[in-house]
Picture 1 (tube, rainbow, N blue to C red):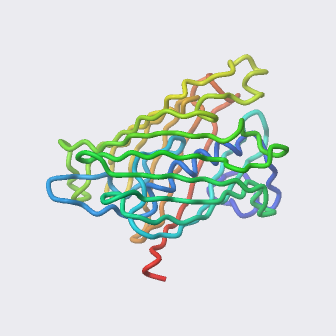
Picture 2 (cartoon, helix red, strand yellow):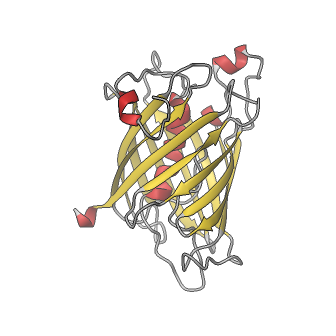
Length: 275
C-alpha cells in the first residue's frame, strides 16, 4: 500500500499489531458516539452539525436513540515503524440523552486481518445546558496485556459545546463552531515505551481539546490536542447517508512519535428502527 485511503483492503491482509493500536482505539472510540445519529434539535438551541469533528480526542456528544454502528480506522506509517496499522470496531448505543443518558458499547478488533486481539469501550453521555453535552467513558477494556501496547484501560470525561452565536447557513439548526475539552488517563497521559526510549518523556498532559469549524455543508476542519500531540483533520460526509469519514495528520510536533502520521476513520451508523 502506498496511499492509505485508496488501497486499504490490500494492506489489511498483512496487518500486524503495533504501536498505533491504542492510538486507533482512542481515535475510534472518540468519534463513534458523535457519528451514531443526528441529535434532535429543540427551539432556541443549535447543536453540532452531523460531520465528524476530530480524530484523536473524545467528544462530549453521544448518540440519540438506538443504533448499531461499525467501521475501520488506520495510521500510516505507525509511529517508530515502517508499516501501516489498522483497527476495526462495531457496537451499538441506546437511550435518550435529554431525558436520561445514552449508552454506547463497542468492541475493537486490533488485528483486522485475523479479526482478533479484542478490547472493549463504553461511553455514557447526557445533554446539559444549552448547546452542550458531557460524556464519560472507558476504552481498551479487557485488552490482552501480552499483545496490546496500551498502558491499561483509559478513562475520560469530556465537555462539548456548540457556539450559539454562530449559526450555520448550510446546516440549519447547527453551529459553525464547536469545541471539546476533557481530561483522561492512559493514552491521554502515559506515553509509549518508544517515546520514553527516544527521550520524549513519559507523560502527556492528560488534558485534551478540539476545535471544529464548518468549511462547507459536508466538510469540517478540525484542530485537536490529543493529550500527547497536536493534530488536524477534515471531517467529511460525502453522501446523503450516515457514512462518516475523517482524514488528517497526527503527531505534528516532537512531543510524541518519530514522525507526522496520516490517519483516517470510516464509520457507518444504522438506526435499529430501519432494520
